[in-house]
Image (cartoon, rainbow, N blue to C red):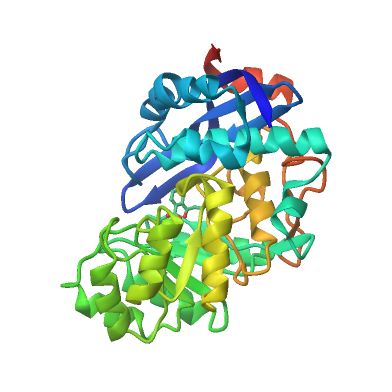
Length: 369
Ligand code: OSB
Ligand code: MG
């Protein structure tokens, strides 16, 4: 048990190397909250995966800020002695807001592990020290541009290419990439842009030998995904629709997907992510580590998770250079074989570089007991 003395909350902003376009919007910068918790034993870092707008889920930066300031942080200070495991109970009275909760669960866990000198990967039971990396490419303006980007990333060594799709930009570009690269591990992510009425699109995609189709239907749906999964040979993968271990269990029971994208920041932090990993593994369902364009802080957390035994597919755990001209931490570099090293130091094993952190900070607030 430890006492949280203070929580420093920052809104930070980093330019992206190129705009990232999905079916729910285009980002040119990464803006997110970063929490630094100071406990009686150590410092811990947590990154919130919410974005500037509530486009991926209903959470967004300013909302997460208020939820942390007015509900989650006061609950921690009232609780007195806390542990990362116990935070889920402390946060019990606050429904939802898994991204805001994950920020603090991950930060307190990081502090606990740093105090013990134990790495997050070790704590989670990782069985490897390098993980296989894929890359998620935004919707391109032309198929030529998309083919160029795919080629560049394959040359760098990425082991799986994920293409963002939306109605009007799906079968044609995806088919072109498949023609150019007959053997590459290829997947698509619709970010909930389709309905069951888009039968023609799905049956064409079903012929492209995709590793999976990620979140084709509504962001809260499990039932219609189960209907679609029964119609297709290609595996469906859920992202947005899975927000907790209970939700993952329901998806498996219903047959809504055959693969799960685990984003710890989407499900309330690494402890809940571990439960999803465990139940998928017991059910023989492969999982992989998703991403939300995290800075080095969230990336370090994701890499530790991705090293767990059930993560059998390459993750969206790309190199820093795929996202940022300059990361917040020392950059994460991918080897030419498409693998990336998992941090081995205490906790998440990395920290923001102090001068980078100051340069990227838009606003700071210190919350105390
Ligand atoms: O749906 O997986 C997604 C990025 C932001 C929000 C949602 C998603 C994504 C990605 C990129 O696909 C993942 C990454 O490289 O971090
Ligand atoms: Mg996704």
